[in-house]
Amino acid sequence: MMRDDLPVSAAQADAAWAALLDAACDPYRSAGRWAWHWARGKLGRDPVFRGMIERGDLPTRARVLDIGCGQGLMASLLQATADAAQRGAWPAVWPAAPSATAYTGIELMAKDVARAQAALQGLALQPRFVNADMAQATLPECDVVVILDVLHYVDHAVQETVLERVRSALQPSQGRLLLRVGDADRTRGFAVSQWVDRVVTMARGHRVPPTFGRPLAAWVKVLEGQGYTVRTVPMSQGTPFANVLLVADLEASSR
Ligand SMILES: C[S@@+](CC[C@H](N)C(=O)[O-])C[C@H]1O[C@@H](n2cnc3c(N)ncnc32)[C@H](O)[C@@H]1O
Image (cartoon, rainbow, N blue to C red):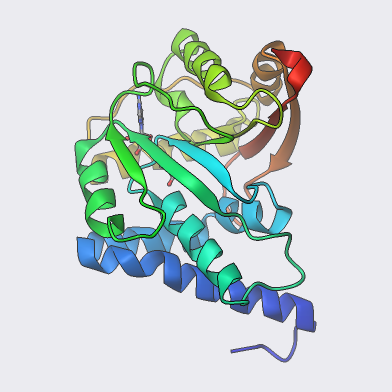
């Protein structure tokens, strides 16, 4: 329902996002209450998902690799965006709807992979989920790599190895990495996100591993050193965290 206190374009965007959220969460009903509630809470409250759509960070017709994909929320969202565009239900105020021609999710936790497969096996996108450690998994050729809140689980040397492997998997011209990290220089927000991370990890029944952060400038330096052009997008609106989305693009000359 449209709110009459908002400009029409903002109301249309809110309505379109509400419909996308419903559509992206719906498949998780078949994987149990936890899976649906998790999808609803994460997609609904984390500003990164709607933000990526509203800025046009995710291209159309891309082969997408989602590292540390959890229960595959990105795959379900990409199906929802493609379906909405096909129905003509895409708001004119947004950039073109992202759509994936292929999606691979890599996830360390077998239970998350099982939930993703149970929920999303019927999607037209036919997402592929691989239960593996990102440091060793074979990475398929792709146009976009999404890594949201994952790299801090491995030490700095492994982070760089994973990023080098990502760069090799990406399309040389127009390859894009969407990497969300915490900015360790913003001490308070970074500490809050680390604390929440530990609580959520425990609640999901996993061992709490040590984590390895870096200041934002250090993340940017690593990516620029690998040939990316990097934009930083603050990604903590409405949250107490110190998260930043790095939009990192490869150009033909960088390889
Ligand atoms: C904070 S969650 C983020 C999940 C998802 N990216 C999202 O934004 O909804 C981090 C995910 O990374 C996974 N992960 C941690 N270390 C990993 C590794 N070495 N290889 C693959 N996945 C890993 C965790 O199991 C968890 O599902």
